[in-house]
Length: 281
Image (cartoon, rainbow, N blue to C red; front, top):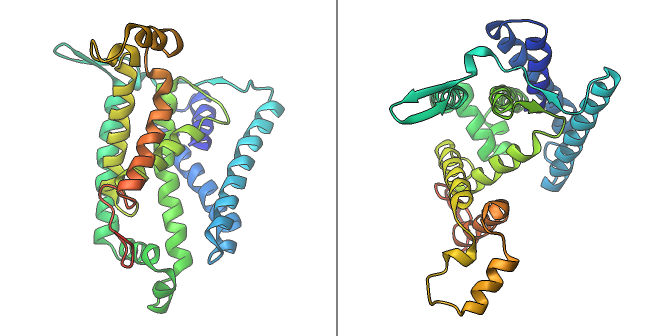
């Protein structure tokens, strides 16, 4: 996501129109994703999961600090204003509802890309091979599936989707920095866990659950105001008012992680995930 944002700054900042910039953004991000797969992940295929996890952290640090170094060498500030295209600026008014154009574009792009991804993984030989490799890599090799090709395709598709997400996310934020990708990717991971790994519909549902929860928590009053009248003594209520935030917005991330823990305790496979054979329960 961060790489796509910087590619967008360079291409749009150079005066290229959006229709010419998008292919550059997507292609450049896909190339970086394929290089990551070839250098950092393919040599570790079959290694313990913790090795792959540590490699992913290392790749993230290299991308972040490499981008920071290039920015400094180019005499650019760490925080760069994002040149949003005019077509995504402004709002759309529907009756009494006002919606930013970039939100409408994000929703439409998400629906279209989700539909294309669903068709790909359920209706094409390569998509079915990808699902088979994700289910059981050794078995996929035994039936003649080219695992390297399948995994590289998955990285290319994931990078292309991340490029679109990074571009739209940058338009909404209005600024970019080398560390901008960590928070959205962390929340995407949480959404996938809540919805259920291995399910496209589960990931979408988990994203909406996470978004609804964050908006709900942000809109609620402080704990002292939420307690019904007479449920606690005036001294306790005053203590809560004095020592706890007046709103729950500052507790948003903590509450999200609490919900994640509860989901893992009650339904470890996620809302739409499937329980593996042999799991206790």
